Image (cartoon, rainbow, N blue to C red; front, side, top):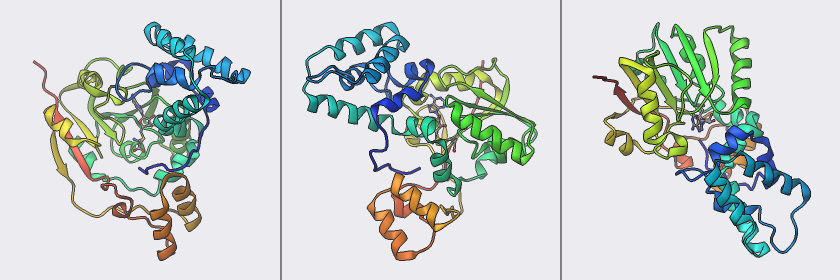
Length: 310
Ligand SMILES: C[S@@+](CC[C@H](N)C(=O)[O-])C[C@H]1O[C@@H](n2cnc3c(N)ncnc32)[C@H](O)[C@@H]1O
């Protein structure tokens, strides 16, 4: 996954989120935009807001949980300078960059990840052959398609409908009929207790509450049958998982990050990576960006846990 560099979005792009998602991405939990910051971004300031932004602010306020809505409204009506309002807007957009990418420009996200190989050894660790599997934070299905070819049935859960639509198209093209796309989040998985043999999550689940956290982990345990496995591929913070009782390993082998064409590599680099990556492409003239040139660990880190219930 890249480190974004461009100011790709504006505040009115938040209109793409529905009420469920606004409540998920703005709130007083770690990893979400704080209601006070969001309120400052939409503050009246010295110049009145354009009507469309004012209407969006009202929609956000109505979507939030009551205490968050109160903090958002309070911040909106505090006096701020135009510079403070602009800075709050930039900070909020920066935090929401990936969510806006998933919702507003899913094709750009697909282009970013299309060539980014992830380590399929994770599927063996999760023991997915013939199993019922939850792909948690499935996105556009980078792991879902290989999973569907081995598992009996896959629930592909994600909070972003645009990515789930992309996934449905890819499944239809591949003739795979054993996947059920589900809208849902780690914090509240829409499946019964003990209903899956394994959970896999690739580049999605993390320690912050908005990305799962302890509450999300309790949910993943709840839906996994005793003896089943939870496997986190490409975790951002392996040490956190180890503290939760997970094993940690780096799967062997080299993974590549190779785009379909040099044009794709340029487009992705311009949107998601910085000047160093552009210089690298210039120098090599080939559509590959090795993970080490991007300063990211390759997607071969894995944390896994066998679920025990007493
Ligand atoms: C970097 S993408 C990875 C998608 C996919 N697993 C892959 O490897 O291509 C992160 C995904 O996590 C999803 N996500 C973000 N917050 C989530 C949450 N609280 N619960 C479940 N999924 C979440 C996003 O919508 C997005 O699809």
